[in-house]
Image (cartoon, rainbow, N blue to C red; front, side, top):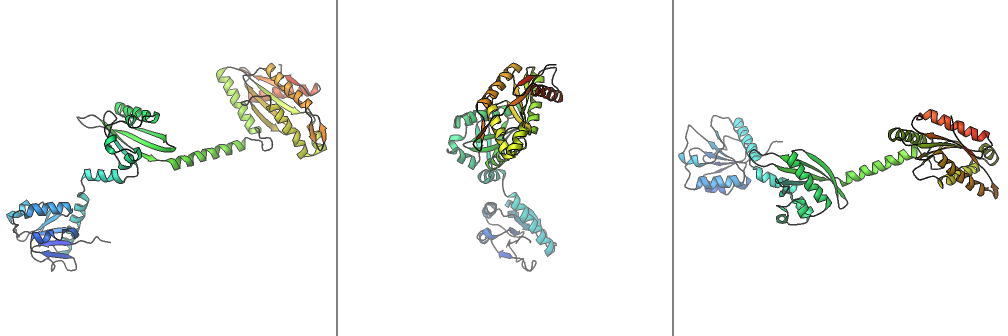
Length: 409
């Protein structure tokens, strides 16, 4: 759809030249001034003689309304009074109607685009932009702020201009802002930061502006990313929960085999890096198959749950405790010796002996056996550690069960 062009012609009638085009014909500048508000282009007949002050007044009004002035010259007729006009182009009778109209249309469009000066555009940008825009001088003091930035600060613009953020609202956040500002000015680098203020999250891009022969200033913009940040945190939380589910035993809410092996690998890497020791324990509930066959799976699970409670009462919160499979469990204890682990397991065994599990009104005693191996430099192979702990476990079982054994090469 083409733009509607309304021509104000001052001089001889143009309507015959431009059939179907909206042309308002007047004979004087004074008449023209009354119609400028609805006009796209003013065309002045080159033979017209302007009265004193007409050119100045027409220039001023056309500029206010952002309307271009064009001269229409016949046979080189050009009155000297027209030299005072701020016209942007000249057209001639030799131009046919289509060419004439296209020229007028292009002039109108170009003039409309170019009529906005940089200062006005900047002010419009600062007033209507949804980002918080700022300019700061060589000392990180505010020299220009967008309207919404001032609204966010909650103080009059004159109280913010000429001050740095620490002077406007003293806080750790403001101190960090000023530190970043000065770093940008000093090093000339672009910085992107995410900050939290009053429960909302903001991302800010700051960059230096270098001016030839003058000190550098900085500018930047801040956008509110609260909704995005909340969604990101929810995603991370969901991801963590899903990851936890993949390494957690559903029944006992301790590590499953996958989670326990991961924990053992991490402990091996830690010992390898820092040189301290840890212990690995493999535990098996004695004669659990008999309990399972006698009571059934669901009631036999009560013994597994009781066992987990008894072990947890003795080990530390940061120790890794997991179900390797069936009635077999594993423990990894950081910074613990084999002898200390024996004492921990003995206390758990004693607690189980003193507190039998009651099923359908009947009390049942049970026990467990354990094999212990130290994780230390020179003995850091995962498969080998599991194999040696297993050997110590079966030594305990073969020695009468309800006891633990330390692996000795």
